[in-house]
Image 1 (cartoon, rainbow, N blue to C red):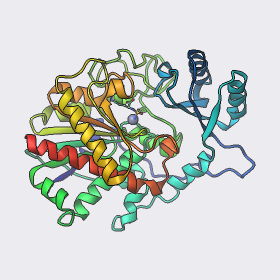
Image 2 (cartoon, helix red, strand yellow; image 1 turned 90 degrees about the horizontal axis):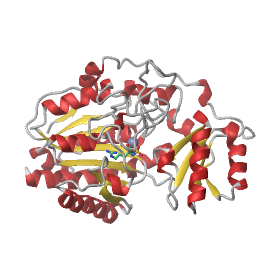
Image 3 (tube, rainbow, N blue to C red; image 1 turned 90 degrees about the vertical axis):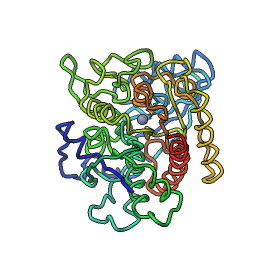
Amino acid sequence: MKIYLLIFVLGFFFGKNQVATFRFPESQTTPSPVEPQDQVLYVLPRSDRQAVLLRNITSSFDEMIILWMPDSPEHIEKNKEVHFYVNATIVDEVKSKLKESAITYTILVENTQSLIDQQTYNDTSGQRSTTSYYEQYHALEDMTGKEKTATHAIWIDCGIHAREWVSPAFCLWFVGHAVGFYGTDEYMTNLLKYIDFYILPVMNVDGYQYTWTTNRMWRKNRSKHPNSECYGTDLNRNFDAGWCGPGASRNPCHDTYCGPYPESEPEVAAVANFIRQHKDTIKGYITMHSYSQMVLFPYSYTKEKSKDHDELLRLANKVADGIRVKNRSRYASGAGADTIYLAPGGSDDWVYDLGIKYSFTIELRDKGTYGFLLPPNLIKPTCSEALTGIKIISAHIVKNI
Ligand code: 0X9
Ligand code: ZN
């Protein structure tokens, strides 16, 4: 059995993975009950007019509204769910605007700050021997690892997007499961006879750290751009696959900013270099995101089908079926561009075009009840169902090596 944890190896290439000691941020204490909290609102636009209005509202309040779903205002369409995080100071104003425009909304998450507190206060170092370690969220300094060489391997990365905390939690949980249940989980033990895993628990190290210290809703990395006041590039728009085409933004202030050129970001360059160097060994690529419960495969940068579309669709359907039967959770499956939205510059598409056929994005729980603020007690069921999926993909890869 070989499981490689890549955080330090790649951290070396990033050249900037020093992390400050975690300090409980002042802004993250639960306000008194009378103090209004940030809220997540849900709207289903019923007409093109409502979609346009929502596009305007969600893009006009600067940092005060953070779109959770879809990824950018341009993707807001009639009859497609919209989830957005609204700063407490403008919650009333936004609600009145929606009412004025006769747009019905519901509150998805009312107690955001309490959820954030619940997810950060119990971060523990040095409790790795207890199972509950894997059922909590962990700050960066809590994760460690090293690298060797493999013959057949599957790469799994987590934490491309900073705020999707259940993703890094999954990578840690997966390592804990593979090591802890080696010999007991027969399927996994067998799998590990034929295939190694490269695990990168957090690709977006700076962004992830920033969500622990400053802004829980941050998505991008934290790079600085010469001609802009805004920070950050969306790492999943910075890979060299249809780079910065429709579905990405050239504006550094936007959440889907593609960066100044492909692989401009050190995190992306490090991962791309590693995968290029190991492309004959790496037989499968799986990148973990949240949220919306989906099993996606290339392409996302074009609506055209890939040449392996049929095989990948069958496999993605098998994953969704497996999760439904074993874990009783519903995952949608399909090519990215049809299933979620057109989004170029993603890691899965780049890896696929490099010649690694089995390339998947898994969007973990949930479907919007908590969104990015998935409570820690849901880490375990989320990881269990993701493991079901990864076992199915891995078995297919092993059969086809
Ligand atoms: O928009 C994304 O990058 C992913 N969704 S998320 O909500 N986690 O941000 C979807 C990625 C699908 N694959 C590509 N766009 N290549
Ligand atoms: Zn994501």
